[in-house]
Length: 212
Image 1 (cartoon, rainbow, N blue to C red):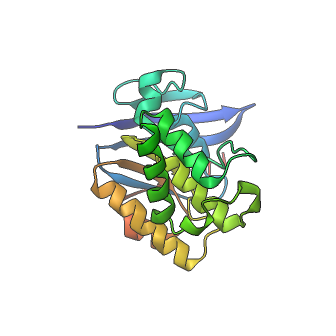
Image 2: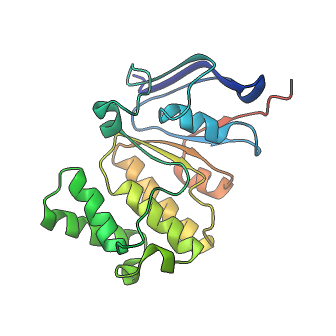
């Protein structure tokens, strides 16, 4: 069974290749690492899968359908962290997380509990009353990850989730992601960290920059 599939998927703008023809398939519950040098198309591929970038040619399907971020069923199935998400200066970390949990169906009480659990999971519970602009770059990255993972999803897309994280936080991230995959979530992750890939992913898709 396949939940994500690409067949000769490629992207070019003004005849400049952003993603060379790429084919792969992912089964439910798999963890796929997308690797390659800067410029090889890792972020572009994830944007295509998230429905944020149109293909020039080839095809991509998510659960048999083309990615469409305007479709409610597609949005419910897939969560993605591709750069920092929109954040409010007027909400604390706990309030941000509770708002997202509530928007995906939790009651107010359950949303607050989920927010506290997410902060603990990422080791930032002591920052719950802080505002985003008061965080360090590493703290901001951990919070962005918590904000992405607090909502339900069958498929998780992460673009270099290890960026701005020190060794201790990368280890914590590996534990969190490994647990998420063990629970049945399908993970597709672009990464430059061999350690993180080795800890979390069972397959690797190495992209090569198109120099033609």
